[in-house]
Image 1 (spheres, protein in one colour):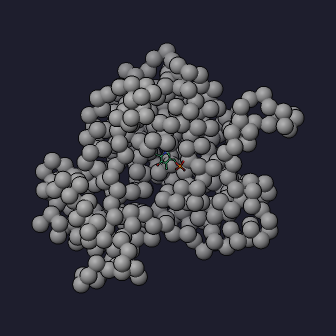
Image 2: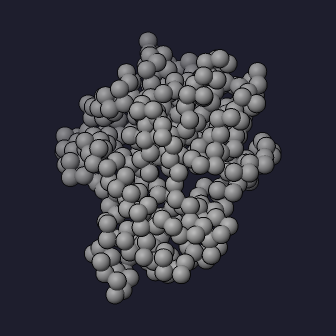
Image 3: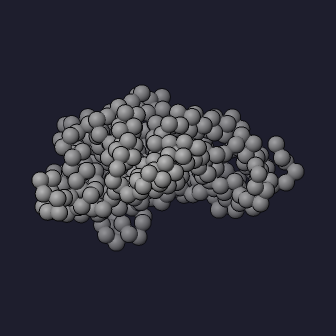
Length: 381
Ligand SMILES: *Cc1c(COP(=O)(O)O)cnc(C)c1O
């Protein structure tokens, strides 16, 4: 461990980034293969191969690539044929993409506060939010921890609602040993650069439902009439993934188990080195959750000696990047303007203020983790 200065790894003047991906050599070589064979658009065998491999991994019939995770969420909701006035229940604490996907369809997002332990949707609060206009529940497996799916699936069955899972941060995460994204009607993934499997930019819809799959496949490519190409009965979208992205995805997916092991190792290292610091709350995981720690999150509680701003500034001065949690969706000016105030959301607002994540990228080394933890102990002492 280099304690003599702020250096780490081979980049002495670079900060330890919140997220540095690993691009596997296979991913690189498959991209080069696709390029040299001339498969660059979404046409050709590469996109289908990535879809087949991902469907196999998920244990589901269908996987449909998209241009990004937000597009996957939008398409999933679009297959429900939502109309203005319809309502979709989702957690207040999530990335803005989840909220925008609902807004794109014209439906109204109905926000639910978070569970204080896992930061996922508080399932005890969902029943009270269901109305005659509710069409779907959209749980988010936030930061790699599963939402409590059984109560959600039971409610959905008794009120005849669709369940769309936002699993953008939860590749390989499990709920009661089942993969997140495979529990509801449709699961949605992102392959953005900081996600567990990346294609640079990209997304995927997964489902066992033939009808949803066929509809989503049409919608993502401008909704050509299946009987007559270039005739259009329905408004479509241009949400295709390119073969280059898919080639990268095939190569990344071959390493998913190693990537997940690395995420768990990072979390275990942080836990071991950061336990017992006053006011620093480490992630709480439920026994039913196989958490993949997309990001290693901490809360700076009231008893923590520094404000979050002072803490992050001190970290940054010592070469460690951190990132604050998402904001409460309800507090977003966009949401306030479009649908007004549904709050307060006590838990969501509090974790949004107290939460941050530490460097958690797949390329992080144990030395770097040790450095980060030493910096934290230094700052609080
Ligand atoms: C990353 C992410 C998305 C959106 O993915 P993009 O590929 O960036 O569009 C959606 N939901 C959550 C929870 C995410 O973290």
